[in-house]
Image 1 (cartoon, helix red, strand yellow):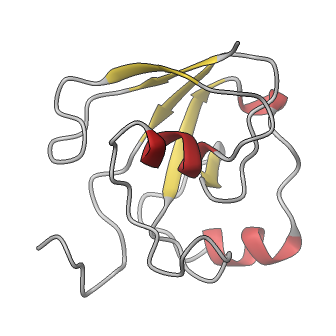
Image 2 (cartoon, one colour; image 1 turned 90 degrees about the horizontal axis):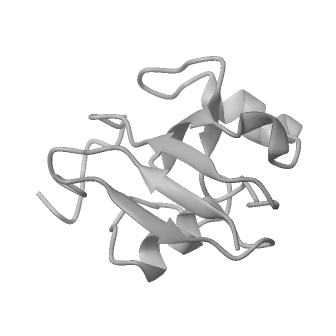
Length: 112
């Protein structure tokens, strides 16, 4: 089973994590199921950018981003060439290394 290595994030995962990631699930779902409370203000409907992640390794193994996701990513804080919305990025058979950006453009977070 593939693994997701989550790089340390000051609030969500201070020590980082290595978690099992069943193929066919979104990165967002895998993180949430493993107590990494990544924001997902639109409830994973591809309508915001709060679940933005940067895929440091394994990017090419993910499903292709759709047009709506690409348009939304243009608004994400800290956008990089390997950025994805974690609610839309589906784990395949390859291990991933992901970074959760320090900030989102969400002005009202329920955790703050």
